[in-house]
Length: 428
Image 1: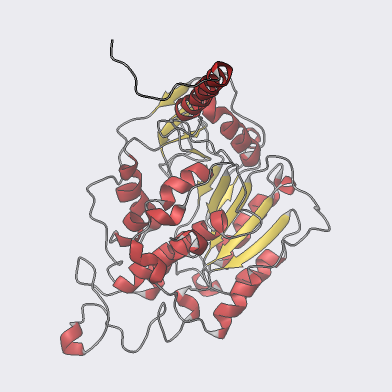
Image 2: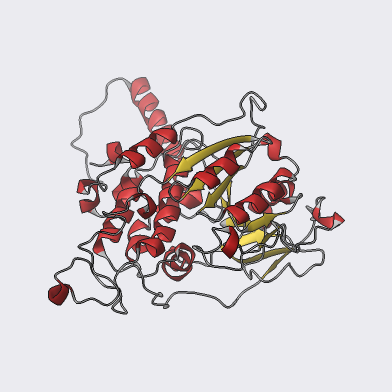
């Protein structure tokens, strides 16, 4: 037997105590590493509020040296307004425990906004939560409509770097910018064309910029939501919300960890925007849609880590970008859980920048042709229903190159700045 050259411990009791302590510490370490609910091998997407992650460490190293566009006075004013507390605190001084925040993101379609605001007023439980309205720029009529809301706490935020508030400089249009298919050398203009040879259009790129700025601000910037551990529901100004939507969503998010532990989200509507659902007594797990979608902070962290993929993909639509490059990079199907009957529908019939004035209104007499039945006013799903998984669904996926419109390096850099603007102290 080989002899040990280590010094002999004269105090045997002390040695045994130290050995026992080492065993206990090893057991604790192994237990934490392999049995922690936030192990990297987890398949459920429910947040642990104690988890600390340096989000900015996943961004390109040069991102922390980027600077946001120089602000004009309107941009600065809007940024200050974003810090104001919610309105209607006198009517609704507190929020319900485990409430689901609702975020409504809008552009400049007041006819549409009136419809969704009216539909939200009939949602059961709306008075229990906070409604945040995110504006792509500032439009007085849109602002006035939101200021008229009295049925819940409501907070407005305004994208301070929206192209719509920079009339003669980036992120808006500048006189030096290339247009359409201009040759930068021949025209002596600035800008990078997309994969199809087209230069940026500020009105078009605002779609993706607003969504990304909003997500970063909601999850990591606002005092009211940056510590929110539960789900947040996102709806657009052309989504009609049924009276049972909030109660349905509450039940879906409660059931998700058990019924569909690998689901990333819960949706109020099918991914096929033309469908009202299949009916029947079952829950559906399918590819994540863009109508009435909700997810929690753990999922946001996964999305945020893919900032580079999001910001460099040549596609001006945020949702197509997510389906084509961000979600596929997760390594597994991104499923969402929903009921068999829709609790939200897309009613938009005209483009993002149409329908602003009465002469071009997309809604007749301020109304839409959506029938709300009695079943849409009550909880129409049950906890004991089984889940049917829809696989191999049609739609955008990995391999799609994008529709373009997002080729300018300045847009890429502004997008990356949005991803890091609330994490400056995290940068090493």
